[in-house]
Image 1 (cartoon, rainbow, N blue to C red):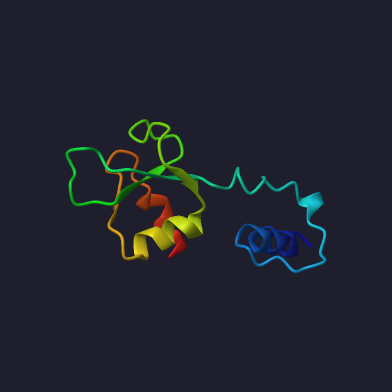
Image 2 (tube, one colour):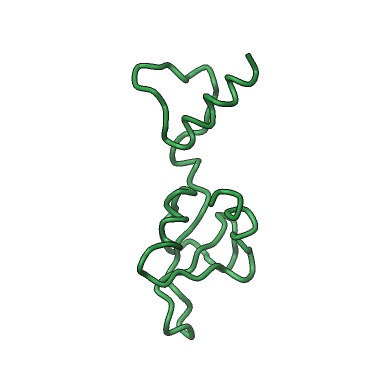
Length: 99
């Protein structure tokens, strides 16, 4: 039973939840709380990047930019815009397992 609960949690977090299923008993964080990454504007001295990707609590990001989910962060890294990984908080150390 424990394995199926883990699979249900992964399904909800990854956006693969089945319609009509009630996942309230799992105690999952809200969608806003699952947004663990921040896409912020690049520093003024960096003229070639479109955005920087930070962990939620990175002091380099401050409070500017948008909070995004792991899937959105990976999409930003794979997209046409130049997104740079923050060299201070190193979000790639966590995201590398999600690719």
